[in-house]
Length: 209
Image (cartoon, rainbow, N blue to C red; front, side, top):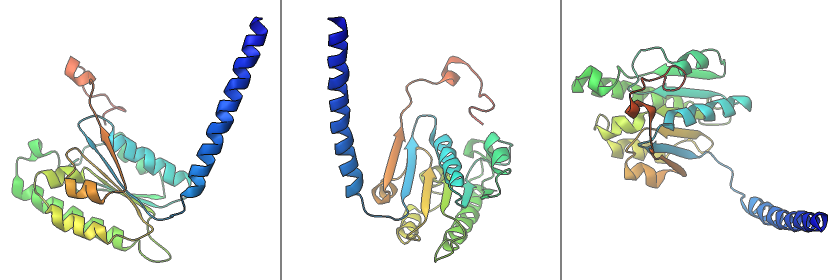
């Protein structure tokens, strides 16, 4: 009796999965648009930049060329910086002077944000046409720059609205402006449930930096 019940469960599961596969295959066939996408990683939880670096790794695995520009992170050595330097497909720039609470200099922060944004536009423009310089551009912590008003949100959003059609673009940082969220194709909000730091655990190499 037990063997019969198990056989019936297995067959019911097979039928259920077959129906699910048919539904999934039909849904995949219905998606026909192929173009670059704008992704935004935001929210108060850990993982926004980390997810972007995972995206970089995936793109490199497909032989794609990637540019990573990090705003606000400063000149300190990070695990991602060391790793990206080993990947010939990736061009990496740190365009910020450091976290805003470290610099304590609004004018300097605004100047470095402007330099970073002009460099970002240069890399994006180089990605137009049949032989793009990059297939993916990551603007890490750009949302923080916009949050503090170091760059005008309307200027950034207006420019990104006319980005190269085939370029994938990923923007990270908490408090993404609503105008950017509205423009984006894919928006993921990381939500904090708990963090080791709150329990007195210091930032860990290889996890936080």
